[in-house]
Amino acid sequence: MALMPVEEARRQILSELPEPPVIETTALADCLGRVLASPLTAQRDVPPFDNSAMDGYAVRHSDLPGPLAISQRVPAGSPAEPLAAGTAARIFTGAVLPAGADTVLIQENARDDAAGLTALEIPEPGSNIRRRGGDITGGEVILGAGQLLSPQDIGLAASVGCTQLLTYRPLRVAVITTGDELVEPGDDPQPWQIFNSNGVQLCTQIRALGMHPERFPNVPDNPDQIGATLEAAARVSDCIVTSGGVSVGEEDHVRHQIESRGALRLWKLALKPGKPLAFGEVAGCPVFGLPGNPVSSWVTFGLLVKPWLLAAQGAEVPPMRRLPARAAFSVARAGQREEYLRVVLDDGEIPTARLSGDQSSGVLSAAGRANALAVLPAGTTVAPGDSISVVLVSEFLSPAAAG
Image (tube, rainbow, N blue to C red; front, side, top):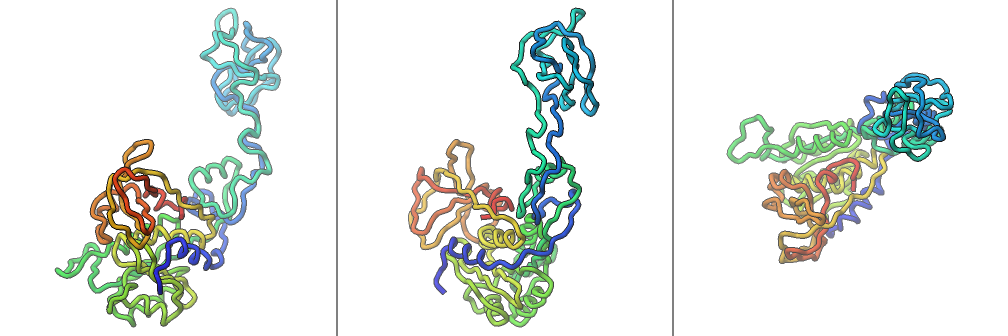
């Protein structure tokens, strides 16, 4: 297969989505990271009554500057009596505005002494009042279907009296690592072995999306064992993500097992790092075969697996933001693949991007130091000071910026 551009691969992958998972009724406190399955409509105005935006005095504007008698005290959470002409009500932030009052005089601009309340500075009519329905109107749709629920979304739902929401069941994603060279952290490696970082990394990336990773034991470079593990994973998961075994080496068996036990839809991207990515299905279960190099796995997951998983979860997938920056590095030789370089941005208005370390696809420490990825289109050279585009690592990993 010819190398496929990243955007074309993303379009193809996102065109092959299953139906969203089943809908569940979820307690509001458990909705963080869930995807809303049905729009939420407000059943009342927010705020539900005119109230004071400041500590001060509720007055009739026509009675200012006073002096005025203090006729009542209205803390938040208490009812108020109608305001008689020529009087003021001591009022506190969030308290209901007495009928007849049309302005709140803030306490810093008032003097209350034996003569009564006097305005030291007269506000505009209607000042310092939060009007009924000023935030939300009853009957208004406040959260749309497909919304990935954040803490502020959950607070918004609570503000209209919601106790539960209809959400999609989180996807179950199998994670399979392969390779004779891998040993789990905590075990004793042989001199020719390395610790398995991809298993934990992929599980945490999936968990960060609000989904449930199902970790399978590492599989040695044995085609029959790899194929059997793929079939076992397909029976219990909504999607499978593997790492390793998708390149062209004699010990790269994952791609062949996907083909022989299902179908291979996509292989080889015009992407650096991350060329050998496979996408297909085994026993009807979608499979992403990621490269074994940890940076390649990290990049391909963020660019392609994450948006697919979110879309399959029923979420609206926004485009990934690219921000302007200036290069503090050079690339003298134009590559044939779109490249993502790990960089550190400074705090300038148009920030400067410096390489965060060795850009080899096996050097994960440079990803740990990076706060952005510089995106270099195929055929691009870079000189210091050139304008480039970057993607913030915080958004690259975030479910709210899915790509």
